[in-house]
Length: 343
Image (cartoon, rainbow, N blue to C red; front, side, top):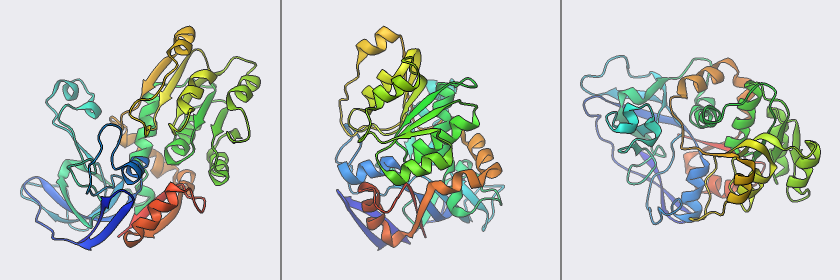
């Protein structure tokens, strides 16, 4: 099978490797499409995430769709040729967090694409049968890959629900930011500001539903949103970028008793947070860890409104072009937002 391995910082290699049969309770899936996530880009640029460095070589990719190739002993309900979306997280189901319904912080979690567990930048993957979700006939292989990041965006709104008509600001209009904007508007948000330095991504944000787009290189974002809101601030602010001072800016633009949601992943191990501003406002700070039981809702939204989400996928490339795909995202070339790799 073909495998794309990140074997050094900013260096992929594509090679042929062996396959093995699925074990009991497992399904072997032939991967068709895999979206590139922002966390994949962290591994590409930094060799790891936060304090978890030096994780190379590794196989990335955790936003996959594919078709069943083989089934292991004891598997029912799946047959060769069935189309599926592939959940990347494997939980223990018996730790205190799983038993309380917080599976995303399972003590014994295994996550495809988080070392040492290889991800889906490989042609065949054996995985637990219960990690497969039927891919609706309305969705193609590529659009189906959005189920995982859309579930993350939905989880952020489950942590910090928005009331009909409330205002919001979203820093960063990469895929997660765009999906957050779409989810906000579908949830009844009022005015939504999008803050993004890349012109093509600002246009995508407007297409997805943002009411105002701001270029932080040209505008003092904190001042502008203060003016726009009559010095009140927005009800809720999402940082989907975690670049430069975006965390600080989200704290400064939110109203008293507002909510700040950190969905992005900083490159730095230690990130400054203005606790005095949070304290004076008694604002609540939420931190997003992947998703938690939002997959069904994500699949429903994709199935019912595929045209709303399809523009987020700006490029589709063969797996052999993985190196150029990551370089395109790193340097934000050619209007790239979500790139999907295909086998």
